Image 1 (cartoon, rainbow, N blue to C red):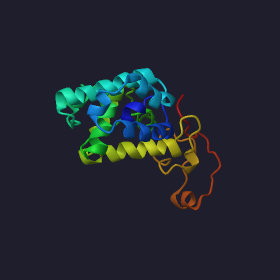
Image 2: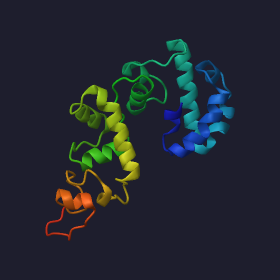
Image 3: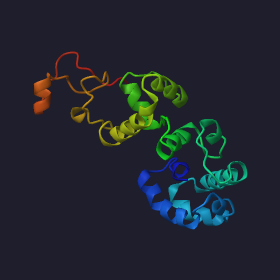
Length: 200
């Protein structure tokens, strides 16, 4: 449920909404038979609450009718559930089941392009290309690291390249590459000619 709620919403907002939602509907059966108006009321602050209510209740009904109330682990089954696309399915596989899955959100897609690991913009194509570079057991952790890095350091509007541990290898870095000892000491170099800058 949380992954469906996260669309066009912040983690902080989802974390505020989910406790009451989970308490009210602890099982797929309970959510499948819920009052849409009550679900809308509980998730209203997450945005797009009517569409999310349809997805949540449709997902719960599909679980009850087709999967005996259990969340499936196969990608092919997960993406048949209302409100569940590849990103959400990969989150469920990697987090809930500990199975290979590489969720590609806006942070992941943006950072792998900045790092020069892909030129693809379609999340499915990004996933296919990046999974080819890593062993399956590392897919979920890699995605999570990029998401956290995108929130804390490589922020879209104001990237903190001077604090980035990947600046030495990032072709999009906005800081000069320093020698190892100088960089480790925190020294800043003068901007040299031909300074690498982020591509427009």
